[in-house]
Amino acid sequence: LTSKDIEEPISEEVKNTLEEIKIALTYGEVIGLPTETVYGLAGDARNAEAIHKIFVAKGRPGDNPLIVHIHDTKQMETFVEPVHENVKKLMEAFWPGPISFILPLKGDYISSNVVAELDSIAVRMPSHPVGRKVLQYADIPLAAPSANLSGKPSPTSSDHVYEDLDGKIYGVIESEPAEYGLESTVLDCTQFPYRIARPGAISITQLREVLKEDIERHRDTSERPISPGMKYKHYAPRQPLTVFFGNMNAGSKALPYDKNKKTGVIAPETMREYFKEDVVFVSLCKDEASYREASKNLYAALRFMDSSDVEEIFIYGFDMNDETEALMNRIYKATGNTVIRG
Ligand code: TXA
Ligand code: MG
Image (cartoon, rainbow, N blue to C red; front, side, top):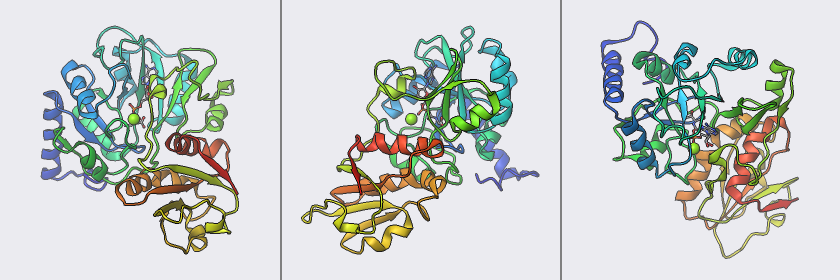
C-alpha cells in the first residue's frame, strides 16, 4: 500500500486489504508496518499471544519493552495515567511524528509482556500515511519494535523486513521506504527533568524550543540504562567497521587499508573521487551537509555491505552537533567505537 493508494476515495481492493490487515491483527497475527522512522513489527498490544509472537520472530530478549503505536491521543486514556501539561505540549508539537514518550502506565489494559513488567510505557503516534491509516482503520493499539531480527540494522524498506522475517510473520505491508531511516527519539517523561533515552529524528534543540525547560541529554553509559534496549549489543556488521573523520582527499592514503583485503567505503558522494582504487564505494548522501539523507540511507548501506564480499569497512564520520547526534549514535553503535581522524 502506497500513500497514493489510501487517498480518498479508496478503491475496493485497498479496502479489502485494510480489512484483511484488521482481521489478522484482531486474531493476534503480527505484521510488518511502514512508519516514517523504520518498519515496525506490529501486533495487538492487548494480546499477550501476539506480543509473544513478536519477541519470538525477532529473537528479542523478553525484558526489552516495546513501543505502543496509536492514531489518537484518546486511546492513551485506557492505559496511561493522565499526562502532564508539558507532555501535552510536546505531543501537540511533534505528533504525529518520530518521537516516543515514556509515560506512567495505568492498569492492565496493555499486555504485561509489552512493557516487560515495567510500570512505564512508551507511546508513539506515527505520521507515515499508510502506517497511520492502518492504525486508524484497525483502531487497535499496536505494539511494534523495529521489524528486524535482533542484532540486525532496523529495516527501512519492506524488502529488509522480508530479508529478516519472511516465513516467520503473517505478512508485510509493502510501502515506500521510511522517510527518516533512524528510530524515533525516545523521551523519558517519568522523571524530571525529562531525559532523552534514545536520540532520534527529533533533536534536543527542537524539544527545548517547545518546552523551554531543561531536558537531559542522552548519555550512553551502562551505569544507568534507562531504556533497557540500550544495554543490548547493537547491530555491528560481521566485518570490522571503522569511522573516519576529517578531510579524506588523500583517499586511500588516509585510510589504513589492508591491501590484501577487499575494502568497502560508505561516505558522501562528493568523496567518491578520492577512492578510485579497488574499493566498494557506497554513497550515503550528496555531501557532508546532507545528514538527513545520510540518516535515511545508513541502514540500507550497512545491510548492503553485510551481504557483499567486502572484508573491512570504513564509514564517514559527520561533524558532531545536535542535528547529527542520532546519526552518529547509530554509526558508533555499529563500529564499536573504532575511530580515525584525518
Ligand atoms: O521509530 C521507532 O521507534 C520504531 C518504529 C517501529 O516505531 N520502533 C522501535 O522500537 O525502534 P524498538 O523496540 O526497536 O525500540 C524501542 C526502544 C528500546 O530501546 C526500548 O528499550 C525502549 O524503546 N523502551 C520501550 N519502552 C520503554 C519503557 N517503558 N521504558 C524505557 N524504555 C523503553
Ligand atoms: Mg529495534
